[in-house]
Image (cartoon, chains in turn red, brown):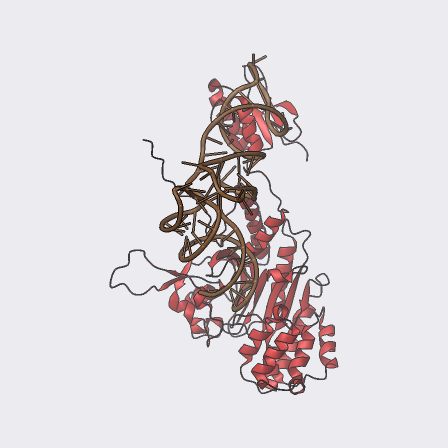
Length: 459
RNA sequence: GCGGAUGUAGCUCAGUAGGUAGAGCUCUCGGUUGUGGUCCGAGCGGUCGCGGGUUCAAAUCCCGUCAUUCGCCCCA
């Protein structure tokens, strides 16, 4: 019997986070908070399966676009039969594609505009890094309507998000900014200069913050005008990039900047429409604090299904951490699943990215490991019935109550309450005729009490 | 998928002229009679990532491999 037990050394799976009970407790508080705000605007909840048919996911595509396929996890049985078809189930990559499928599938049973929220895990086969996971939560709100979706909703999305994020417990000292734009501006600009491949232009502009002005400018010149083109021949692009340098707090600032900039011909109808819509959305958000929402023409988003308004949200002192909340408008996402025209607009909180940052900062409001308010001690074996009865009385009055499992030394029972962060320890009488006593663990005070009418101390 | 760094106790890490491992924290027990957090004492706990090679001898040198991590691609 000398040989040691072989153990599997436990280790985390990279990119698949898990939290300790006290962190999980804070996470639950966040979910509750977000749910409360979403529902306060009338969004209803749905949940879709973790998997979609691979075909359903591929149907979203459009032409080429961002090749997300390589980041999609596929599900298959370990023991495949010889004749089994190739894997056809995939873990969803976001919640927009499942929503599109869901909306098409239940079209007849839904009420439009369909406003729903969804808080689920999504999976992406990426390289994990700070704030980047392979399994993480997204909290989405989207509105989908038939044929036409008022621009009102494009403005409502960031308003809801601002309300949600700025009031999350632990976010009090964080400065965040929602940056919005409209893809039609850049698409219109491409039209105006007769360049077809606006998707490639979008892809390059999307990297402006990372690559810098010079590099972006060079890449665009090469793409649109070919190598060796003199800088003077690409003025519309240069002028557009110069507009990206600034953030615009309101529609007046945005219009001023465009009018002052003579290098851009604003007569193109698509471009004109984009500016008008962006201006409208900004106007609708003017009640928010200054800097909460700004127009930023460099925001265009990577995913290819966006067609109008686009959103990103960053920590102002650390935009490089990545967007913690993004989304946009899509003219017809469900068109690949049903022969209806269903435009929508939505936005998604990168819950885990956001939560992990605040968790690492240590500013999460963390209560104890146990949700319990009270630990009822077991003084001796004869008191077990009394302990249970006491606990039941307190539970019936709405308190969360743990009982101790054995008549160990009180030292041990107290230490247990201490370690689990239970604020009150309840002592049933040790002898008949004596009163119950309750100890407040934070200040050490102990006084007589009765289970029927005891209340927590003030503060 | 591509480049850099790292891989010793549950955690954070010491340990280079190569000689079969240490600290702090955690955890367990104790410091007598019915009470926690501090302090004191004792104890549990290590295939030194894994596999080869060099050597009388390797955590320590060489090769490979895996994992983690940072950056790239991409994105919440």
